[in-house]
Image (tube, rainbow, N blue to C red; front, side):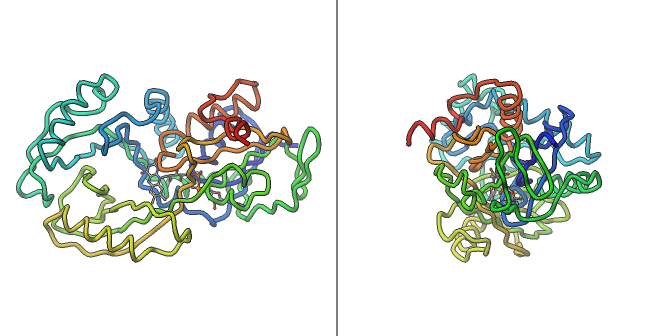
Length: 347
Ligand SMILES: Cc1cc2nc3c(=O)[nH]c(=O)nc-3n(C[C@H](O)[C@H](O)[C@H](O)COP(=O)(O)OP(=O)(O)OC[C@H]3O[C@@H](n4cnc5c(N)ncnc54)[C@H](O)[C@@H]3O)c2cc1C
């Protein structure tokens, strides 16, 4: 019998897998390609909510933890998929300028932003006069997931298939799935949870995000730039631009509306020619209170969930993957703000 079966290998499943590995536990991962959120995500680890110039939720709890997690994971996988990169924020008017200086007086933001605003150089290709700088990080998620998956396949512990809920037999102290027995099952299916009969009543809903990939020889951007959307350099004169938020329709077809919104915004952000080469999208698993959901099923003590990461999975999933395993195997209580209990208490 193995300790855990992990269902889904996006950011959530990856965090559980990594912590299970570090604890030298035995496990299998079962994942299919039905959800794309982590694969298409920008991979930004950004401590500041730019729109409101406020620190993001529990930044002190999550930011440093995430940085050392991705840096260790990059070393383990022998890749360079994690980097420091500033975000240059467009400052359009005096109000935004004042907000920036006010934010710098906030001790929770101070460590992450530059006190001074910089003049934009005339040949940058960016349409703005002033820029503010945030110290952020970037994770190349599609490569990270591909590289980690490869090592798990080599170890014979990654099963590339759809999990069939009908085949699950739950016993008192373990579960049977196919020919395998596990002490615990941890569901990390992202928006795929809507098909999970054990956890589809937690109010996790989808929010679709589209990105454009564009090519521009003239844009010489080495940092991330942010006005309405983010421009993220990918190398070889390619850039990722977005992402949008759409409640409907929740499918994986690139949206025409999103494309229009983004091209209009890109025209306002850059002053050089570009060519769109691709449009990609994914569905964020989102919750009403915008907090992740983790914990144990109210009836089945060997079924657990890690989900609801919304638009900030890069920062919060590493620490919460750790906290969930501490909860399951060492009985450590979960933070009430993220515990599944808050949802059960409401119903
Ligand atoms: C366009 C876009 C941009 C984003 N940018 C950022 C960003 O810059 N920074 C940030 O922090 N966050 C960002 N996010 C949000 C972030 O990507 C999500 O919080 C995160 O991907 C959620 O991860 P997850 O593992 O819960 O879900 P997912 O990534 O959806 O992974 C779930 C996995 O489970 C698999 N699965 C589902 N059901 C089954 C089943 N029955 N059997 C087997 N496998 C199954 C799926 O195929 C998938 O592989 C972005 C999201 C989008 C869509």
